[in-house]
Every structure is written in structure tokens, then in C-alpha cells.
Length: 393
Ligand SMILES: Cc1ncc(COP(=O)(O)O)c(C=O)c1O
Image 1 (tube, rainbow, N blue to C red):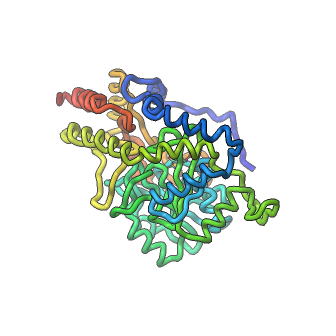
Image 2: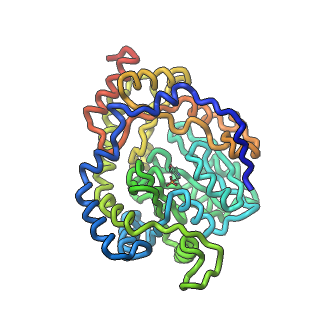
Image 3: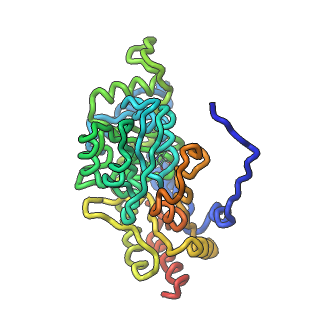
């Protein structure tokens, strides 16, 4: 049972409210995308609706095959959301009560919630100051006899250094589940996300590098056993109709979403390249500002789900965010509160001091407008506004 206390007061910083308004630069991602591919998407919709088959049909099967191929994996299994993809993958790995799952402190809550849904305990590690990601060294210190799995998150579209992590996992006989929700199409040493751990979970939340028209997700794996277990778990625990061998879930990706996502998959590499061009503009124009810019490791093909800078101080983040908002430019702070510091994990007793880098970055991270339909002149105008803020224009 979850105890919910509705009497608790929540203070929302004033700058958070300021960021919720639409801006001339930074809003309109989905509307512009629709202008580009709406006709094709409607063709897909028109094909699916008359068939009368809306779940587990040919469009999902085709999309799963195409997404697996794209992700250098043997299999892909469409799921109702990224959150459920993480949860079902962990369940299939046998994660349960008493187990520990190691993940990173600065991620979306769903990464950790997936472990909690299994009855396991999430164990949080700090981040590498350059890549903003976890690494094998940080993880090794947290391994205990209870550890069952590791969830590396390819944060903002930059891949985790996977080779040392997989070696560590092998040594301790642990599962590795990639959270690739920020990294559709990203590569590690030439290999796609989705193929780097024992399985990977992707979110198709609309604003992602590749998003559904609503919620959606997918799991990739090349492990035959995991494939069978995941298929059972996403569809009420059955391999054969009417035979429910375990308490499974009802979490399939719809035919309609699969057909629409197939249109997007054809565009994904092109869209990621557009994001990379925007990033190159920011990299070049902001190089001499006090902002710490995203580092790209030599093993990484970055796909910039987000362009995350680190400001020199918390005060300066607030001021710069408000300055950008005044210029009709939408900045963002992702993620401003570490997952272990959320009320949901109060009982675990973590302190900010347990995560010196993550906690410091949470107060200073400032994400610039970034999506594939952002125009290059808008990126230039954003960078110019930042240069003006620093009197460097
Ligand atoms: C890192 C990360 N993991 C998991 C999720 C959960 O995905 P969804 O919103 O599709 O449930 C998200 C999505 O927002 C995410 O950013």
C-alpha cells in the first residue's frame, strides 16, 4: 500500500512557473513535425483502422522487426510505455523482493520506479562529471550480494561507456538493462543502443527523438529466453490463449501507434543528424562562455535528446533561464531534483552529499532548445542571446 499525504505543502520555485509558458523559440516541436510527416502518418492510420485488428497484429510485428534491425538486436517487443518497458524487462530478468538494482541518481524517476515495481530496491550512484553518466568504477563500489541488475541510462543521448560495465556485470553475474529512452539511434563504438546490454528499454513519449502519438515503448534484446518471458509478461502471462502461467500485465504497443512509429523510424537518422547540427552551432558559438558544454567521448555518437549545459552557479541558472524566457526562448532544467532526493525515496535515507557531482549539476543544469524541427536560425538566435547575457556579443 502506498501512503499518500495530501497535506504536505510543495514549494514551486518562481522560475519553474516562468518556464511553463510557450515561447517563440523552443516550442512547437510536435506541430512542426506533423507538418512534415502528417500526410504519411494519416496514410498509415487509414491503413490500420479499416482492418478491425488493433492489438498484436501485422503492423506491430513489422515495426518490431524493423526496430530490432535498426537497433542491431535480434528482437524488439512493443510495450505500452517506456516505464512499463523498464519494469517488464526487469521482471523478465527475475528481479524481485530483496534484490538491488543499481542505477544513476540523475535520471527520470521511472528508471528507479521500475526496480521498485518489482519489489526490489534501487541503489543510486553519482555521475561522471564529463559525460553526466554512470560508469563502471562508480557502480562497482555499490555491488553487494543482493545486486541483481544495473540500469545504465544513456542520458541526453550520450551513450554510457558500456564495455567496462559489461565486463563488471559478467564478473558479478549481473543483468544489464539499458535505459535508452534518451538515445534512439545513438551509437557506442559503432553499435546502436539497444544492442549494448542484455536488454534495453526505450520510451516513445512524444517529445523523444522518436515519439508516439501518445504513450509507447519497446524492449530490445538478443536473448531468446528474455524474448519469450517479455512477450508473456506484456500480455497477461500467456504463451497460449487462455493459459495464464504467471501474473502478467496488459501492456502491448497498439497497432495504430506501431504503424505511425514506422513512419518516424524511417526519418530517425535524418532527424538525429539535424539535432547534431543544432548541437554543433551551440558548441561553436558558446565555446567561450562560462557554460560547461556537453562533452562527447570518442566512443560516442551523440543524438542530443537534449543539449545540457552546466552553469557556474544555481543563481546564474535562474538568471539565465529568466533572461532567455524574457527573450521568448525556452530553456529547461532536466533534472532539477535527483531521484534519491524525491519524496518517493525518502525512506532510503540518501543525502545530497552522497552524490557530490549529481547534486551540484541538478542545481546548475540548463538545457537549451533542442529538437529536430528547431531551425538553425533559432539555434543561432538562442546562442546570440546567451552571448548577450554574458556581454560577449
Ligand atoms: C530516462 C527515461 N527513462 C524512462 C522514461 C519513461 O518513459 P515513458 O514516459 O514512456 O513511460 C523516460 C521518459 O520520459 C525517460 O526519460
